[in-house]
Image (tube, rainbow, N blue to C red; front, side, top):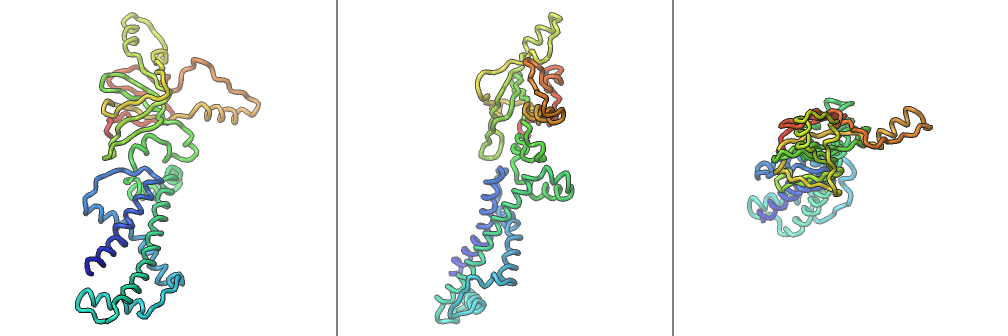
Length: 314
């Protein structure tokens, strides 16, 4: 019986709340996948359970909610707990132990139900804070630093880097563009459409749309011949809707958060007036093209925001 009671308390008060928090949080935010030891798993579960446990204790022990639903029986709550403690440490002192265990079980199930509910709310609240991190960082720097220490360490670095989820809401309409230098010396660029990770959380590959490849050979020939061309003329569009690049082939990469064409047009129309019609000029170079001076072992592009270059396994 001691093993049954211990297992019930372990699952109900430690492993269950930790698993619920991790599952709900992972449904809302892509979590970092790490292989925790048993000790680390216990520490994580305890940390995730502290606040929900305190709230449940206050709610049930110091508010009228603690009496809903009304639980009645031959044995009072505290008498049932005392009898079970005696039964686990010595010989049973009550002849009707069945009624004692039933009463204690009902009390525990009510407490655990509220505990797990608060764990769900805690996970939702944590995901909401992260989804508004960009705005919170500007308004409340101290809260943002606390968020970094407690919440961001559990977020996949790839969601942080390859999406705009954590930018201020006013900037989330930007698109994520990357320049990828492969181990074979090829330079690609495109808009991030999706990415995949391995079971340990490492990047497995990325999908790019509107992809293009930089023609380094043509650039070399033109330089030898003394021919000067715009940098944008060396980019060659790649047919197909998605280009898949394996992470194992990435030698270097650069990430930019660019205003989309629709956002730029809308902003220009708003500033100039509703009567202005914005017409895109075919063949115009993008902001990124204007900043690309040359392609070699290290490359750089100037955009609205810039991160990188960095190692593929950063």
